[in-house]
Structure formats: C-alpha cells, structure tokens
Amino acid sequence: MKRVLITIIFFLLLILVWAALTGDLAFMGIDIALWSPYVLPPPSTVGQYLWDNTLNGKIPLSMLITLRRLLIGYAIGLIIGVPLGMLAARFRSVNDTLGMLALGLQALPSVCWVPLACIWFGQTEAALLFVVIMGTLWSVLLSTQNGMKNVPPIYARAARTMGSTPLHTLVFVTLPASAPFVVSGMKQGWAFAWRSLMAAEIYVSVVSGFGIGQYLHYGRELQRMYQVIGVMFIIILVGLLADKILFSPVESWLHRRWGTGKE
Amino acid sequence: MIQEKLHEEIHNYPTAKLSVEHVCKDFITNNGSVVRALDDVSLTINEGEFVCFVGPSGCGKSTLLNIIAGLEKPDSGMALIDGTPITGPGRDRMMMFQEHALFPWLDVIGNVMFGLKQKPNLNDKERLEVAKYYLYLVKMDRFAHANIHELSGGMRQRVALARSLAPNPKILLMDEPFSALDAMTRERLYGDIQDVWEKRRKTIIFVTHNVREAVCLGSRVILFSPHPGRVREKFTVNLPRPRNINNHDLADLSQEITSALKGYTAAESD
Ligand SMILES: Nc1ncnc2c1ncn2[C@@H]1O[C@H](COP(=O)(O)OP(=O)(O)O)[C@@H](O)[C@H]1O
Ligand SMILES: [Mg+2]
Image 1 (cartoon, helix red, strand yellow):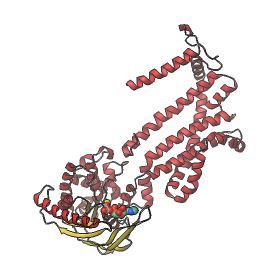
Image 2: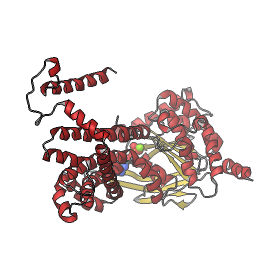
Image 3: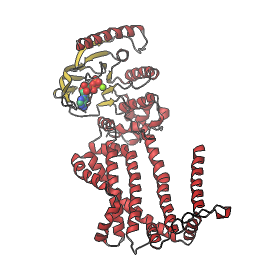
Image 4: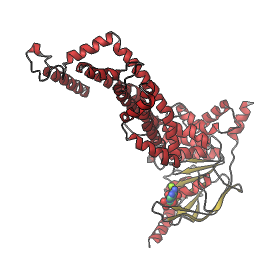
C-alpha cells in the first residue's frame, strides 16, 4: 500500500513540475514558462485534446483501426512463429538454419522493414501488416524455441515409461509443459508487435484508415505537439494495459502452477 | 459385468522375473573421456521380490534402472523380463523418479489417469474407478482434484506411486524416490510402501544411497561400487515385516553393510 502511494505521489509530482514549467500554474502565481507551448504544451492542453477527441469519436475510431491491424499481424506472427519455434527446438537442422535467420533478423529494428514494405506492397494495409509480422515473428519463434528447451526432460521420460508414443508425448506432455514459456514468448511478441505497428503507422500513411500512430505523424506535420504528446500517452496506455491485464496474470499463474520458478 | 472386470483389474497381481546378463554401458563425458557406468553386471530378481540397489552416487544404479525401464540401451549384454529381452519402455515396467515428475497441468487424478489412458482394455469409467482405487491405496483419495503445486513433497511422491501402480505393471522401478524428502515424511512412506508391496506383490527394484533405507525395505540388498560400476555383494534381509527403520536388528545389519561399503570405497582410493 505504501509503495503504491509512493508511486502515485511520484507521478503527481512529475505532472506538477510539467505544469509549473509550462505555465499551467500561473493562477497560483507560479509562472516560469521555460518553453513556448509549441515546443512543450502544458498538461491542460494535452488533456483537452484527449478529452475532445475521445468525445467526438476520432480517437476511439483510430484505436479500432489500429487494434485491428495489431491483432491480425500479431495472430499471423504467432501462427507462423510458434510452430517454427517448436521445430527449431526439436530439430538441430532447423535450429542451425531458421534459428540463425531468426537470431539475425530479431536484431533488426522492425522500422527498418518500412522502406522494403512500401516498395513491395505500396501504401497499403499489407505493408503495415508486413512490418508488424516481421517485428513479431522472430521474437516469438526464438522464445518458443527457448521455452521448449526449458521443458524438464524428466516429463518426456516419465511419459515414455507409461507407454506414450513420441507423437503422444509431444502433444500431451511437451506442449503443455512448455505453456508458461510459450506465453512469456507471446507476451514479448505482443510488445514487439505494438512497437512495430507504431513505427509502421508513423512512416506509412495509408488511405484505408487513420491509425493512432498516424495521428502522431500528423501532429508533427501540423506542429501540434499537444497532439503528439496526447497520442504518446495513448500508446503507453495500450502497451501497459495489454501487459498488465492480459499477459502478466496468465504468465505468473502458469509459472506458479507449473512450478517453473520466475516470480 | 463392469464390476467383475474391475475386480480382475485390481485383484490381479502380475509379477515378473527379471534377469540382467553381463550388461556393460559406457558414457562419453563432455570432456571426451569414457566413463564405464556398468561393467559386466549380472543379476536375477525373482517374481514379487523387493530388491534394493545401494551404492555411492556414480556407481551406475540409475543407469541400470534406465536399462531395465527400456529408456537406455546397454552397450553389450542384455536385460530380460520373463526370458524376453527388453528393447524399449513397456507398460509391464513403471518407473518412479527422484523428482516427482508429475504433470503440473493435470490434477492429481488426471496424473494417475495418464498411464491408464494408454491401456486399451478399459473404458474411461473403469479407468476412473481404477485411478480412485490406487489413490485410496496411497491415502491420497481426498486430494483427487488437488493441483500438484498445492501438495507437499511427500504427497507428490504418493501420487507418483499411485500413477506408477495404476497401469498394474509387473515391475516397479524406483530411483531414489524419497531422497528429497524430510526424515519424518520418509519414515511414514517406508510403512506405506511396505504396505503397498504386501497388498500388490509387485517385483520392486528400489534404488537408494541410504543403507538403512535399503535394509528397511528390501528382501535383498545389492551393493554396487563405482568406477567402474559393479555389483559387489548381495545381502538377504530376513527381518520380519512391517519393519521399522529404528529397529535394533535393522540397525545392526545396516552397520554391517555400511562397513562392507566403506571397505570398497577405501580400497578404491588406495
Ligand atoms: N547421460 C550421461 N552422460 C554421461 N555420463 C553419464 C550419463 N549418465 C550417467 N553418466 C555417468 O555414469 C556414471 C553412473 O551414473 P548413474 O547411473 O547416474 O549413477 P548413480 O545413479 O549410481 O548415481 C556416473 O559416473 C555418471 O557421471
Ligand atoms: Mg542416480
């Protein structure tokens, strides 16, 4: 409880400093606006922007468009990445080929795919999805592979002594045993997907719908820093919510029940 | 009808005779040197016998158990069950490990059902009845729907025992199953495992590095020595059952075996 309080006070202070430095506290006699509102807008302006555009439906609509892209790209990344990761864990030849490729490409920030995506797919949804998939796929593949390798070999041995065939062991023992690690990988993949999509939306403007990242881009074009900061808040919020509400509870539940350590 | 089939499933105690003939097994370690885990080991274990393998760690006890389980192949020689060479794992031999190796994604009864589900001649309802019977036998019937992470170490090994017994194997292989437990829990399990053996009359091979544990449980104690792994001596334990680990005669016999064991290890280091 005390720790939560400290966290809240810290953030309130941060906003207070921001407000003080941008003239929001002038009514209290604190008027030390160091920057013009074009450079650093006060919290009130950012709040106003978020409030207005939520009520008029622009932000919710762009969120819908963005989340749709995110889910599709992420799902494709998972559908390809998880099985490939399993193959890489099981077969040395897959590890030495695909695994190496994944290792290399994972080191590449997904925004680097933007130029190629634009040439290959034009200014389309497909270009956005491609960047998201490239950002998700390799990290999902690698963490799934890592997860499968973490399965204690004693499970498979126990299953074999009870008469499990190799296929039965894979489906009913190795797969469930690796669940906590695979979910950790899915969580990491989600974080990568989100970052990739924002990069893609900022650099690729498509007519098929304005995503939240495109609002950030146009905020820059139109010199509206309050819009840029407002959208940044939304991006942070979505990232945090998915992690804290969706993935982390499932992950820690699995690790606890599976006894796979990790607090 | 169902009752009869269950009755037969539960009240039929298959056992088997096991022989190990001139088994050798080498391992290549990470630094490239060869370790002789088993060197010309021969043994015969009779139907329904409770045999303990004792020896310091590294003398090939687990390796021999794995060969009997069919998880590992000998380099030369062979293991036979009722005269038939062992070529792989089979339902006639169940293995219990030092770590419990229970599946945490299944509950207690789900774990006991795992091996039973591979048994073709039963339907699911009968399997459930059989699973319940074995949980009752190891005194875990009240915890049928508990999750594995909620159980203590001793309870987990009881469930693991039920899981190994449920497919009604002829031979039960136990690799230091109690060594990770505290002394109190272990003592209770000594009573229970003897009780189970009285009731089910399986052929049991129990591996331990604790001489007293071996004398408490085994009808015979077989002493191994390391580098290379060999059978050194065999002791017959004629103490009345159920045995208590704190019994005086038991302590004396343990003492005798321990000094024999010390003799080998001292000779090794000379
Ligand atoms: N998979 C393996 N790879 C290499 N060496 C092994 C392997 N399994 C066992 N050994 C070696 O074989 C010897 C006997 O091992 P083990 O059967 O586990 O002994 P015990 O169970 O009596 O402690 C040891 O020296 C061990 O290091
Ligand atoms: Mg061992």
